[in-house]
Image (cartoon, rainbow, N blue to C red; front, side, top):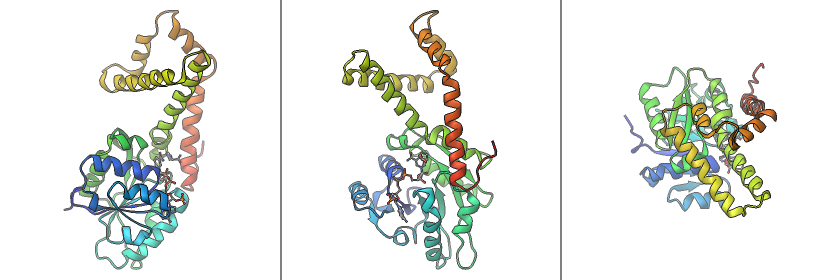
Length: 284
Ligand SMILES: NC(=O)C1=CN([C@@H]2O[C@H](COP(=O)(O)OP(=O)(O)OC[C@H]3O[C@@H](n4cnc5c(N)ncnc54)[C@H](OP(=O)(O)O)[C@@H]3O)[C@@H](O)[C@H]2O)C=CC1
Ligand SMILES: O=C(O)[C@@H]1CCC=N1
């Protein structure tokens, strides 16, 4: 059975997320010569090639013979990419394990689109990673159909686990859309929060560079406490909040302006959009 280290990996699409995962994998010691990336844009391809991995403009050249094929293209082009690969896979006796990171695209669609000419279907795992994979701090949700073997699941777990600190297998496929709304899109929520914190402090007179350093370290420090402390987030929040003090004043303002509703509605919007991208809009 292949291990991650001796598997030939193909990334179809060499954009933001593929690049984050590849850099994370290389930092973990994956052999660069075992990784091939197909990417139409010269600029993206050159950036990826600079990492030492193989690059091509041809999806079939990258994914035709690979052991694990990671579909890292936008949801809207996933079907055409799958159909192109399926034609090449029709010549193979053993099909690759397919890993799709495309938001919303269902296993049912992926299996349909990757059917070979003799109606075989590649074993497919859906994954929702996030860009902190770049620094080995990713969080990934995973879901596999019943055809995927334990050994294949372990292989995909090792792939994502090498760039993620949390790899969470969900037991219903639609929960991957929730993972998308939480951790897939989540880094952007924190970056937006830091952007606003910096702008607020700057408006109150703090130089931008100092505000950025303080806000960034606050985010990192709070994140580290969440990881290392045995306390719940609510307790950590209370520990900062002196009665009638400064934090209380800020959190009261959050509450009066509907912070909870903003977060609820935002995570719902992302979750619903993921389902919509996959052609299975959620009911609520
Ligand atoms: N970015 C993120 O934080 C996350 C993204 N995802 C998922 O990852 C996938 C990729 O997202 P992301 O990396 O952000 O997107 P990008 O647009 O950065 O990367 C996708 C790349 O694939 C290229 N491409 C387009 N068509 C083809 C084709 N036919 N064959 C090969 N490559 C092609 C794109 O070119 P072009 O620009 O011309 O289209 C682009 O360079 C998406 O499905 C997204 O849902 C999942 C988790 C997190
Ligand atoms: O915005 C998106 O659609 C992708 C999926 C999760 C993060 N980025």
